[in-house]
Image (cartoon, rainbow, N blue to C red; front, side):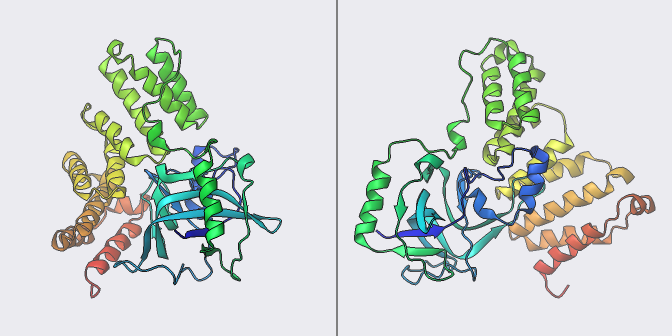
Length: 368
């Protein structure tokens, strides 16, 4: 078996921006505009790691690997080795097993408040990704990367056997976090006081941006939910959902946001968030259901005109992704005909929304 080696820069965790001076909102903003995707190579992003290496022409173009039917996918089930250069030596920082390699750089844009934009050459399940602690990154390889190339295929049997031995015999810890391993984790020897646990978890969530620790406290509080009122349980579900969303564990966040929304009458902010979460996870049918909840529940007035048109646009985009072209076109044409009130024009210009509709319509019919 050949190993594919990618050369990247050094990072301690490869889990995002490592500047501790950023609070969660500043960090979120910085990560949104970051132009260095490789710092996320070992971040668990909804069950997957998305690996990036800067390639001069944007194409992997490994001629020794056969293409699949999808021209963008070069190969599945490959072992990817990630290395960084120091003093003319290349040190292993970690590896992906059972990875998918793409010939062209992949790009997936995020929705508002949901994760980050993805740019990647390699994708693997987070449970199959392994990042070494800094002190254990001592295994060096003698690799002859071609000029201006950040990748190579190892086909030397001796080198391959050495790497296999290292990977198979490594018995120390890894430092990348697989979120699903922590979904139900709790605090040991915690007091039987769910409200106190909730408050402490909230401090970790909002003040310290330590979402995994917050999750543990909320999980522990829920062990004593028999002593809580219904509203108190719902509040903890909401806090757990927020923690999971900040951890980019969107599938799990949806479960707890839906526990909340199914036990309260109506909350437009939670429902809108669920729309984006379901769109991000490509569950467009469910997004449409939540779009309709808002569109049917809200009476159109000056202060909510823009948000209702935005929700209608999202509904149209969902239909477009479901290949229901006529339904999407009908919604967008109706939005385009709406003339915002004079008051709305003064407060919040809706040109961006109009342009959004026009662009979606162009995707449907380039003549429009």
